Length: 295
Image (cartoon, rainbow, N blue to C red):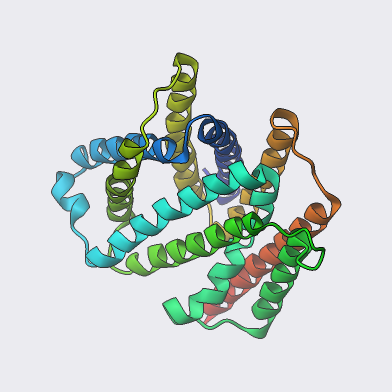
């Protein structure tokens, strides 16, 4: 397979992952509104933990090798941050809706760029800082803080994006010593352990159809992560990452059709600015990587 074919396959896999994650968010919103977010997240991570245990047991060295990490406390922090981020984001779905939650959440790649300096020691040039500033202007357009109608719930997805940015940077940091399979194992186990107490405390019986949706939610999570991992294995991240924004389009369609959400003009404009700033940041990263490769 040629490099072009690899990139094309990676793009389609990233689009598939974005579509799956959007559908997963729609199901999460329905279940969290019908029952509660605690059991939805807990069962989702039970399935994830079961999957990583099976994968680890069948890998060379087994579970012991998968659990061997050079950063146990950082791996623990990653898992805790991810669980809390998902709790917060699902809460945003139920209080703010899918469209506006995702419109604000798209700021996270810019937060990754902004925090890469203090966390990873990377240099952030003035062009990327300008893109970050533009992205925050886009978020302000979405939130309309001066309109007098800003809801405190509008800040919830912004908090989720900040936590996901920190999680992403910690993932890159532990990758300096730990293999991806190790981080994958720790993520599944820690998230299941952390989410279980609150999930059991708030346990509710589900109807048979909703158990079917819960099973679909778990299967989608595994399928989405598989597609995303395969996409990054087939193509350069800078080539396929822009297609992750496709999730915002699918989420908007789900919100409009299934949940009767409204697509306000300021959300369209603000999200467009945030996405454009994110794409510029990815382009600058690719330019810097090519310059570094030339020496």
